[in-house]
Image (cartoon, rainbow, N blue to C red):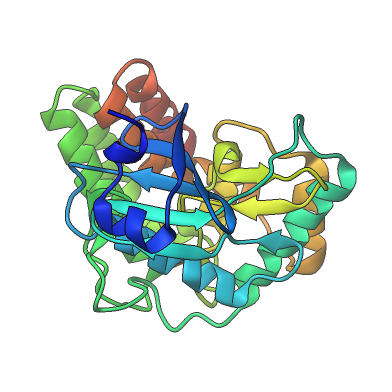
Length: 289
């Protein structure tokens, strides 16, 4: 069996795939470089994906592409189904970009966040209510603080504790923090279109030093969520944050609110991978207290 034989037939036909080359990376999907008459294409397949996950990712890419400036590029969606997603190929750089790349990313992300967003919650009522593969109530609201606490942090804490991945003391600690949810989420601001999973691995630098965004889990919400995720695993320079703040100034105290906004990704990692992520959740909760 060739690699092309591992791809859905409708994708092979639509792209006129000539050859496929497996790529490394990813823990829940298979990735390929697919050769077509128009050049290489990136293909992600998820044979056992929950229904709608890849169409949701495609819609997120299109939403980001609609508001992004030249400072951050979003790959074009070439094919999407419940089993496969094909995207414009990116010629990646062999190393990280320099100061100009970092500043370009910061100002480009600020432009995405400044674009009009209608509410907190879903991109569209026609899409599955998920952030990534995690089911979430994305019914539109104007209350980012309540959304973050009641629809993200509290359910994930319950799930993590029930799964034995988190110290049960987290429940009481979170209950003591809940009355301060508005303070911890920051001053009210217009909602933003969020990437939703903005760690350094989802920022690609191309051979010319240009920035790209991939693998979004987009929804509308508070922009400090993306900035907190960027600091969870590192990979973004200080020039990036300075350029962001120059273009779209952040509210006072935003750095002190980072641990609160990092709780959802930390909790998802604790549930999925265990290890030290449960302890990281407890540290974040105690930092907020």
